Length: 103
Image (tube, rainbow, N blue to C red; front, side):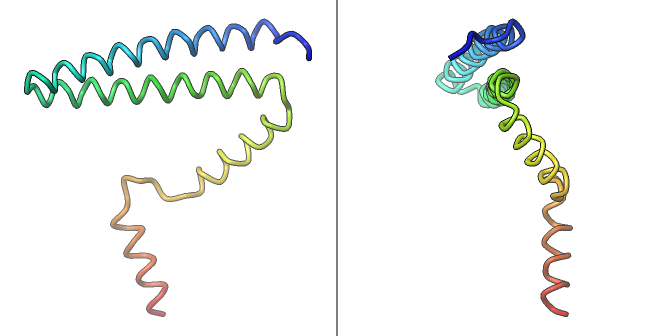
């Protein structure tokens, strides 16, 4: 197996730092929950989830640099997801589906 490219190594390092940050936010959230500070806990949890998602994106990016088939599949998935209605419009999506099934 060949050595990872410098760019892949850089993305792995970024992902590692992101995961450390996500863990810190998760610990802050846990502490806030235990103290009854629910808004603070929810905010920290949301930040932890967002940072974790960035770390996963970094890892996937690092792997895709090394593997063109994965890069191609990621592009296909991103295009398919872009065609879906946004999660902020569930009511409109449901209403459209109901109208179509009624026809």
